[in-house]
Length: 156
Image 1 (tube, rainbow, N blue to C red):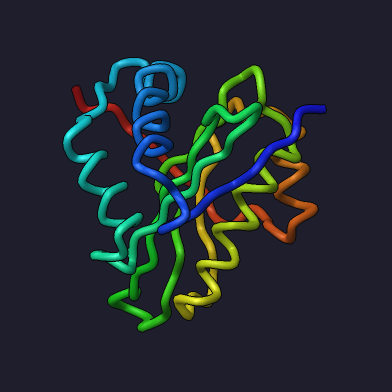
Image 2 (cartoon, rainbow, N blue to C red):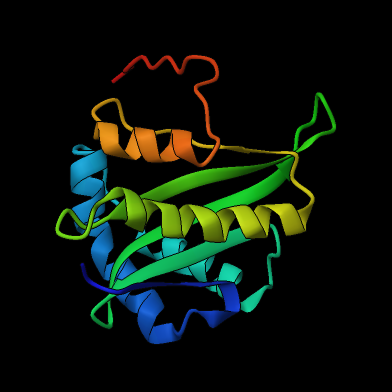
């Protein structure tokens, strides 16, 4: 098995951020076939997470063989109705060549540590419907559980 490392927040170099951004077209094509990433917004978001200019934003990258092969972006926010703080995974992706439960677990652990530091009471995220069962099982082993149902309706 290939050695993998995760770097988060201010430990992510500019070059690693660029490598993560270069993965976006593949990630979006897989997860959002009709979508097109707004690279400038992504650069701003990732840059704000890395420089801590927006401490409620999170970025980690996963590297294998000294090459970025995955990323996870998230945020912490205060729920307006309950006044509880949640950490939410906004987008995560791992290249199919490196995708496995352990790789996902490395990024999840990094996000969990950050979420606790922000005072979040819960971590929320979604998997695509066709998520491999091994990733769902890995999430369950880390203490995640299904909660609620996400419904989607295409309007255009």
